[in-house]
Image (cartoon, rainbow, N blue to C red; front, side, top):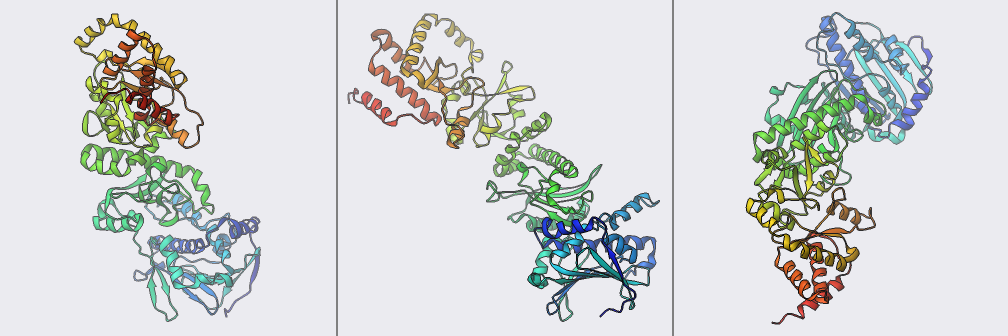
Length: 631
């Protein structure tokens, strides 16, 4: 029983009742938050005392360890959170707990900014205020006992969260600091359990800069937090072993970090980041529910890692923490998603990550290839997002691809440096696998003329190539386009042959018409190929039309319910096509030629992975031809 002097019965500030009701019943869906908020406030109080003691050494004995203690009494159904920080007097209790609009820490920060000592580096944590009221989610009554450092009087504040509070002076003086007693709702007694408390502390407050101890019923204390906020250390003061330990604690994957991003930004927005790129690909990297795994802190107080994209989705392989004093300990975590400070941090972190990855790629391609094998497909997802041209080009510049011109991975800049003088396009081919694209008929003419082609084999490549058509003023073009013309890359001997073929042009025109008549609506048109050398036919699409693979993907996903006719390119130098041309010139139209033309079209579809309308008709035509073969 407390010995009290005259008790004052005061009303909360006008808006507190409304806000308190929202806090208790709506905003805090995770009740664990109440303990995080109270520990945060306690840490704030310790931080303020540490600073004030530099100006007034009498406030704090050098041997006095600042700390936070938690204990419980299951018989009384009470939870206690105690700190030996700055403490509060009567006016502080009214200002800090009687109104949500006021914040003790904010006033303190303002005082520092306006003081002559503002040049001093002061480390403080979040704003004291609304978080305190989350206590009423789990408690029917909250009691706060406090004595301010340097003052003799002790005070007690009590409320049941019903619109008013009691405040009075204690007759018997208590120790400096603040003790909060929560009289728990019966159904919330799980929060009195030591293991439940420990789990909350390690999850949300593990890196509080003061010891957080639990005192059991026998009076024995056990430290719950690691006090290992290594991101607050200078970069050169953190050992590789410390990085490895911390990486494993935040990444939940094996191995060591492949790359470490440890920076402190002190510009218009202040924040510290300690991010890791794992050396092992997580098993759930492409899971539909996969979210970013970067924890957001405000002055070493954990806020969230689920409700805010502090990094873009295409950098979701990054693990670690971002800590900023410029963010509030906001009661609504959802508002952080559209917070201006968060947006600026995200842009800055993205730019830094892309820059550092670019340096890695230039320094050691072999090591970068390991990264690219693990995370390249994820990184390329960013190419599909709306972003300024310079940012997209920066991202594309760190991408690496297979190529017909090099066994090693190449960049688009490498490709450009090797382009032929008369070459106007960056050529590429997409496919399901490296083997399939390397064996594609589409490459024949390019390979024969020494033209390099980039090979894209990740599903995401079909998407970004549909939105990006240029890089550093160089056009990006698929080799499957029907207007690809390789004749300008022909040798003088080839050009002479082309000039001498005028006699065959009439025959070619006739055969094109015949192919078109036989295939009908199955094709958009039939053209003489200017890229095939070894294969008789291939499919192509006109410039501006949807890519073959993209259209097929949309059909498979039921987002497209039709198939557009494709262009059939024929190689008039191939023996099969020559045979058809000769037979048609000598004998005219006949069923055997029609079967051959249809089978050539089916062949082109099969090579490109396109489905046939009627497999039984394909088998019938094939059998017709096989039946004419003499064994």
